[in-house]
Length: 200
Image (cartoon, rainbow, N blue to C red; front, side, top):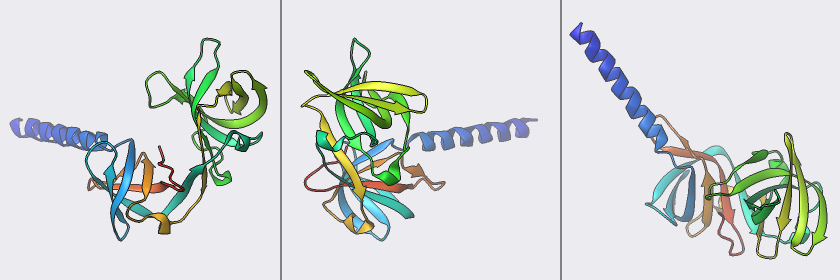
């Protein structure tokens, strides 16, 4: 009986350890590539310790480039990090214009990773100029949002890239890397800054 209890306790401890290991996988890795060894990148993070991540064989690389309000057009699929306003609209902090191959990525409306903010990934339906900035109506599968893009909003665009851009000194951002059974991290997507852009 004691042996059975011991086995159950050991199994529970192992399960807890596995859960803790999974919980340690970062939600986002941002920083500069310090070194490249085959498919493994060592990233010097803007905040936190250096981290090593393996780039999957089928990984997609996207360049992050400067964009302007003129690039936010009807039909474009965008991601908007914003601050909710009293009238129910969202005031844009950051606008990302997705490449066509990324259409539908994370579609919907949800909290962003900054306190009190929201994230909307949706298709631009219409644009109207206002005294506060450009008013953009966006639609996603479960609803729509009114976005106000002022002069202070940061606007960027994703463009197709390749692994040749993953070299020491490049600024990159990786979202939700996978944690493999051996504890190593792996990603199937890397965003790399171009033209002085530091991807967020």
